[in-house]
Amino acid sequence: MKWFSKKKPAKEDLLIDEINKTKIALEAAYSNFENVVDPDLIDSCIYEMNAVQNRYKFLLKQAKAADKNFC
Image (tube, rainbow, N blue to C red; front, side, top):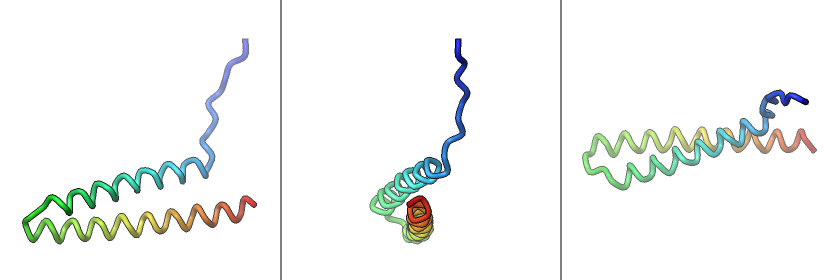
């Protein structure tokens, strides 16, 4: 009987997973922004959206660089 060992996920798989998580976080931030009325919460949502957008852009750049290195 052959035992299957768990393989470590490839770097690309981890990157794609992080991109998907960040996309969900961005959707949640937009949803929160649409539903708040307090000015302080609006500011907080804007900061959160900007932070998540910057993370998303960074991860996309990393994915593009990894794709170029792969080819």
